Structures are given as C-alpha cells and as structure tokens.
Image (cartoon, rainbow, N blue to C red; front, side, top):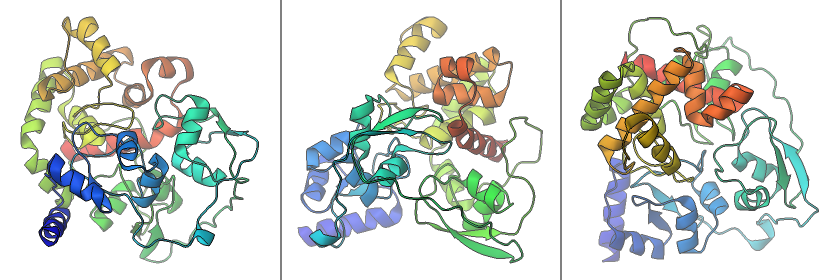
Length: 367
C-alpha cells in the first residue's frame, strides 16, 4: 500500500496535476507531505498538522503565503533533520518596530528579525498577511537583531547570458531593472509560464539588455507576444474558464485581454484557489467584496464559490474601477490589489508596482 501511494504521489507531482482526495491527503499528512484541497489555507493546514505557517513557508519556499493552490503538495518536515545546535533560535528581545520598505513582505521581514510570520501577524492584528504597504510600521515581537544588508554591486552586462539566483522579496520587475533587460526577455529565456511567480532559489538565465522593463501604465497597441509553451498548455486546458471570462468582459465592456490577465494573475483561471486571507476563486474575491459588488453593482447577491458568479462579480468590479479612474490601468489594478480607499487616499503603493507590471505584461500575451 505504501509503495503504491508513493508511486501515485510521484506520478502526480511529475504531471503537475494533483487530484487526490481527502483520504490520500490524510495519508500524506501521516508521512512528510500534504496535498492542498479546495478551501484549504496555510493556517488551517498548519493547525491540522501541528506545524506553523512559517515552517510551511520556509520548507516549501512559498514566495507569497497568500497563494496556495488546490492539488499543490506541501512538505511538513525537512528532507533531512538538522541537529538542534544548527536550528535557528527565536530570541526573546523587547519588541521593536520596523518601517516597511517597497517590495518587502512578511516572509522576508520575519527572517530578517529571527521571528515568525504568525508572531508579526498577531502582534499587529493583520487581517491579510499578504498585504502590507511601504511606510507601514510593524511591531516586531522579539527575535534577533536585524541582519545587516549589503548593497549588491551592479552586475556587468557584457556577457550574452548571465545567471541570477532569486532571493526573498525579488520579482521579475526588480530583476529585469537590475540587469537592464526586460521581463519578457527573462520569461522567454527561462520558459516561465507565469511571470507573477518566481520561487526563491530559482536560477534564472539573464539575457543581454534589450530595452526598458514593462512598468509603464500607458498601454500602447503592439503585436501579440508569444505565450511560453508551458503556459500555453495550461491556457488550453482551462479554455472553459477563459470562455466565461471573455463572455463577462463582453457583457460589461471590459477589454477582454485585460480581464483575462487579471484572472490569470490572481488564480491561473482556477476556481479552486483560496488565498491565505480567504479570497476565493478565479477572480480571488473576498467574501466582503462579493457582498458589496452584488447588491451595489449587480442588484443581486453573488456566490463567489460559483465559477460563473465569481467571474461575473470580478469583471463587474474591474468595470467599476475602469470608469472611476478613467481607464488608467495602473490605478485600476492598484485598486483591485490594495483597495479603492487606499488608492484614493494614498495613491499607488510601491508594493503594488510589481503586481501591476506583471498584469500589463500578461495582458499583451492575450491581445
């Protein structure tokens, strides 16, 4: 039985599509792994298996705790146990404060201070660990003194192709800017299927400089970019959801490529995705957002767990933002990501820029 189970898990991992039921999930949990089910969150998985969210993030190199997927396999224990002497210890120093800088996230901040994501969340009563903004002050509950940071020397650009290992907090936008190349060039050189997600520790091939990175909010009509083959396979597999997004975009007068790009960024067109904060489905709607959009914009309640209704409400929300911000895609996307009130009061947070750049790039793939 055990050998058969291991064979099933290995085959599913290689195929990249895991459709394993709750019984198998319980057996996996009894060993060293667990398979994410519809509706799961990192905090729920951690509680069921006697581990912490921080351990899951570290063991599985999760760049954004707000993004886990149905069918994803997570490790519960390290492959090789380290000796107690080598285990990092959490200090019990007096709480300090940290001012968030652009591009930072809780994973990196927790590691910097030798504490945990859950400890920072509890100390600051954060409702969404995936959403912190530049300038925000966070209470750091104990931990080691922050590690000194060094400014990395700008790499030379003479070589045709170089290599870069992704570090915590980096995005394709920041990497492309550092090497004077473009997001698209890096995507093509590495066959990246989703420019929104790069894992910590991934070695990227960096092509020679070929122009500015895609960060400008102004959209100009260009010829469609080729979709990377690995991404194209997933796009074809999820054609049914694509059709629903396209139909709703036509219904509300939202540019189809724009709606498709937002949905791909948010969930990869997967209704089974539930975020760490509880956002649901293809358009990653928070329940409270659905309760607002339904009566206020659609005249009826919506069920965000139904694929059609989820897309219906999410695309209608995009239409609202397009009207409110007169088609300014950067502010539309910032509002979808950080909230309308935050955009109206404070403008676009620096931490929202990579999200915006990624969607603008993906939009060109669907043009």
